[in-house]
Image 1: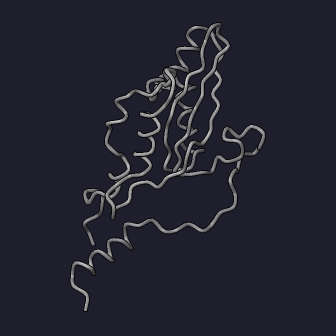
Image 2: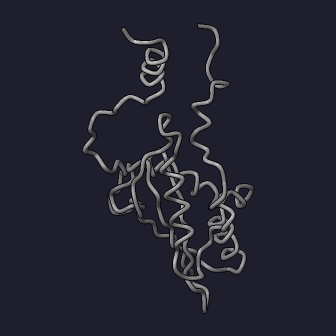
Image 3: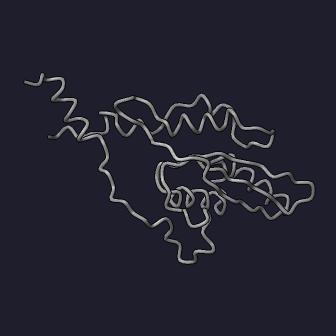
Length: 173
């Protein structure tokens, strides 16, 4: 007979583990496939991505931003687009700050995107977030001096574990 701890752990695992989504072969749902920001892979999720920003300004060296997205890249990209077009969101990321700095100098910024790696987000059993750990690793080991990310991001807390906090669950069971 199972003890109470194993019963509770089993129940918690069922409740807290997101359902396995059906295999979706679709990797892009852009209307114009040639304009997809991620080369027809915009529906990828749980990824570490790299954004490279270039400009029409003279003597401008390209800069690199490393980010992560637990949701699909398309949702994360929508937030980046918002910070590029609406000035009140320009402080959202260091990428958007650089984008607006180029605009202020009357340059034309251009951002290209690519996936660096895929990883799993916070795991309640291991109490570890591979997604955040891999992003920190990519930032810490980046070769070159053109990285836009702040080194303080390496010591930041995982934001994915918050959704598993008991404070967020309804107590009216």
